[in-house]
Amino acid sequence: MSTQKQKMLAVACGVIFMDMIGYGVIIPILPIYAQKLGASKGQIGFLFSSYSLILILTLIPFGFIVDRYGGKKMIVLGMFLLCIASILFATSYSLLQLTISRMLQGLAASCTWAAALPLAAAIATESKRGLEMSSVTVATGLGTILGPLVGGWGTIQTPFYICMVMSFILTILACVYLKDVGKEKKYVRIKERLGRILRQKEVQTSCVAIGILYFAVGMLEVLFPLYMADHQCKRMMVGFIFTVYGIFFVVFQPAIGAWSDRQGRILPIAGGLFITALFIPVPFFFTAKGLWIFLFIILGIAGAMAFTPIYPLIADGVSPTDQGVAYSLNSWIFSIGYLLGPWIGGVLAELAGMKAPFFLCSALLLASISAIWMMSGRNESWSG
Image (cartoon, rainbow, N blue to C red; front, top):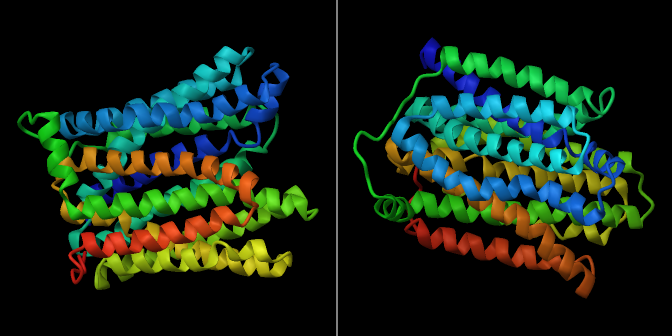
């Protein structure tokens, strides 16, 4: 990879990392902030979900824009909007302003994800696509881990000023180092393009895998802390368990990306989903903290196996001029899974107990492996 491409990939990873920092920094702050402004629990819930709502509404249209006009301007816009959103968060004195800030943050994320993923795919070396694109998934994981930690620094306003400065710097770097790649040279009808993309087995497989994986992860993130609280675990222990998950999720991604370059994308994806299906209900049968840590290490590695090959898989099968829409569609499915998992899990837990949602998860994960096997043409490996 040339020096110019290395700089472009670094900026693409940087903006994704910054987006995840911006998302995660809210977690320890927003409920306290909103309560001080007199928000009810329902309003706090809407504040959190408004981010995903904007993401779902705008991702696919932004993907079309990226394919038609290139991603550089969209990344610059995304980082600039995140900078503005951070300023609004830091100066919010009303519930309305806080809600607008959160929605603007979702709009910024939509710009970033619609453009940065196809950019990274376009500049990655074909023979090392899994390894090189694992830098994107590592950036995602690191941002997810560090965001809540940054959110705990200083006063309530301090993390937002940090985000403001970092996003402004990335706005400048994106202007200087990024170039548009893979633009569509002629207009193609939206219906025609979507049909063309949805017929790609790589797109179908990646959407099934990421949707069911984050359906399960979202459910686990909501219900397992409640299970731990029922067994008198402190908040610090809850944070430690999920930090362990995040560390192993991140650390193994480069090795899994390289493995998928050699052996194909399907094997690690299916293997990760299978291991997740086996182990995701198990923590709810025990109360020993050491065993919980061990199980979350396994789940972190399994999550990395399923997640890491998804982005290079899309690049393997989709034309560069269609990748904006393809990656936006994948992120859209990710958002849907992340929204539905906690909601369905909560309803089932109330009706049938804490273990029931995860037996459903296991069944859906195993069913998704069968679907992936059929979509992949059974014997195809789709090597990178």
